[in-house]
Structure formats: structure tokens, C-alpha cells
Image (cartoon, rainbow, N blue to C red):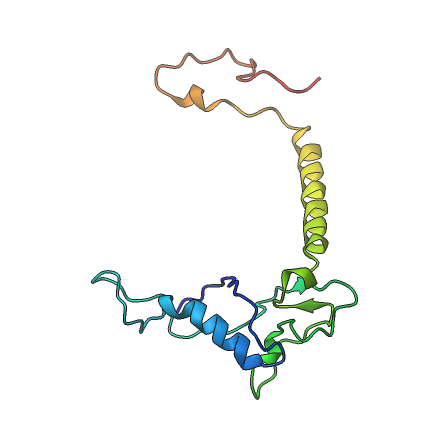
Length: 156
């Protein structure tokens, strides 16, 4: 069994306070990819899925401060009818109108983490010789003399 995680963007349903309206809108968007879809585009078509569900899968969008209780926000616990959903901080959700989501919060944190990792790599790499050029491994390429760098050094 395989699980695919996808993001589905739909037009806002007419009734914001009706969870079934959003469920129907997502179902309509997903219908062409159903395993049981009757409009088969070619003989080998077997569909992509046999069921779907809204799930955070350990990821949730940040909600703009002051909008945490907006009924248009989607949280998987709203969809788990009768079972316990993922415990989610009210500052997070699994979807909703773009204007209610604070996408910069996670982007900024990820950029800071990437910068930290790059700096750590640069400190590590500074203590090691430069890489050998791949061209040296091709047949017929003259070899450098022992101790000669294969690539110009970027070190001072």
C-alpha cells in the first residue's frame, strides 16, 4: 500500500459553516483520479487512489494571529468523524483560505535552518582539500603531478 500526500486547492464552498460543503468540493476535485473513475483516458488506466482524507501528516500551516477560530480553517480532527484526530495547536491548521495562512513563518524558519547548515558545511569544508575534477577520471586525461591540485583552490 502506498500513500501519496498532495495539496488540493478548491474554490471556497458556498456555505462556510457546512463541513460537508468543503468535503464535497474536495471530492469533486479528486474525482477524475479515482480508481473507479468511469471516464477512462486509455486502456491501461487504473486510477490513482481508492479513498482520500484530510490529514496533517505531521505538517500544518501557521494561522495568521487573530484568525485561529475562523470556521473556514480546516483541521483534520474536523474530518475524523467519531475518532480522535491529530492534536493540533490552535495556531496551526491543515488548510484554509490563503488570506488566513501565515506562510512566511515556516519559510523564514526554514531559511534560517538552511543558512545555519550552509555555514556549518563551509566551516567543515574549509579544513579539507578542494574536490578533484571529474575530468581527471576520463580515459586519456593527463594526470596532475603528485601534490598538485586538480582544481584551482578557492582558499586564500
